[in-house]
Image (cartoon, rainbow, N blue to C red; front, side, top):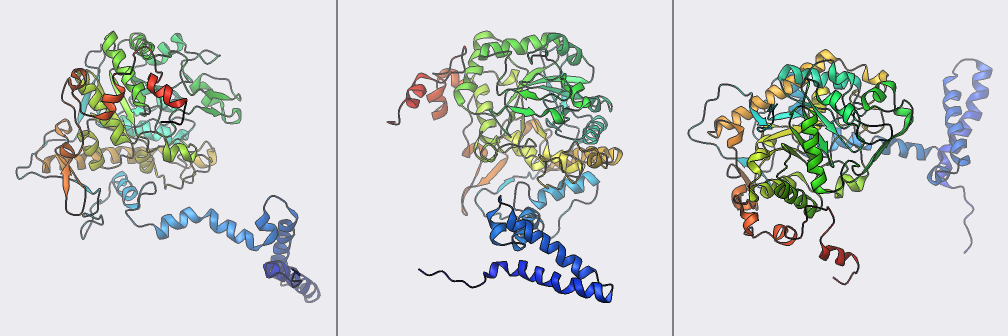
Length: 547
């Protein structure tokens, strides 16, 4: 076939730029002035020459100048959708309505809505709480739960706290603001696995020290656990509990590396590592390798801390691994004081797309599995349960407690309170609100006195809203919330309470083998306390596709 030899229209912008430069440059030189036109055409010409000369972007070579318009529009696509296209109730990942309620409560301004709900009350999945004809009257909203009842130093925790976010992920001023707000409101601030920095210490707020596989703040130079360094931090009066991180919802089963270029003297000081050297967080712990060793390690941490509550955080994956931990509790009699269930909804930690979207059990199913397992083995009364996963409102707290949690943590909710605008730049260091960045020119713009007050306000006003919900429902404390209080629409004509819709075990049912639930019937008998290894029948399935 004979090729057409006409001038390609896709080069029109480039050609017009060159032509404009050739015409306007002599004119401006001859008559003087009007240099803006040749300058503009000159810039476009240089851009076009660069586009056709470079070899990385084929679209730019085929569409010089015009391709840059496409790239620009593509780069601001998320902002365009967020501000002009998405509805107020579309969660991507948090809706405008969810963010606005946090902003309003953080600023302590009117958080009421006129003209009724914007939610589809007849859509499948819509949830609500039933109210009472005899409302309760509560004197305050400072709801608390005692954690570590058997410990020498139990901790009375708020039912709504700051979830794990490390210094290094968040800016220094963000950490200062969070801890100062927590100190004023008497709720706890989880350090994240980056350990306890000077910015956690300065305001004096209660800390839950999270220890991950990198053992930051309690490690030898080779990355293994150091008892001496652990004691130095764990015995601080400000540290109220120790949380061993087994996995997290944002990237379960995934390690990480902090490049040496980001290891500043302040980060190195907090983590106990060398300045300027790469820091690795392995995918698994080196201090233990079996469920029994895990519990022995927890018991040792409790002893070294002077009797403070010690527990672990995990995102649920293979059910037999969780069952193996519980069987180890039964066999040894050693138990954590608490467990924090992290939902697979993700969190502040940046992770590969597949991890964010498709890895890890969502909070509802994970929390229900953990709660049911402990109830079914008579362990629930001894172990408190916290939960985290997109919790930003009083109703989020209420439904989570109704599923079996004792308290809730929130990370992104408190980031919104700091001024986060959901720009989704957390992993780039270019956070426009100065929250998730280590760039001093950005982070230092975050005013600590103002933002710490907003953190305090958000906590206070959210718990005030929870108090209002409890009063309207005729309840006296969040601990009274149960599956009978939350209703979910299952079709346009049907709705059921969590009690009728979801499976809840009776005490001891798992030990008696009377669960009637496939996950327990299939995996519980095969789980072994001495190993995290999969059951034999699972290993056999991995050897063939003939299932």
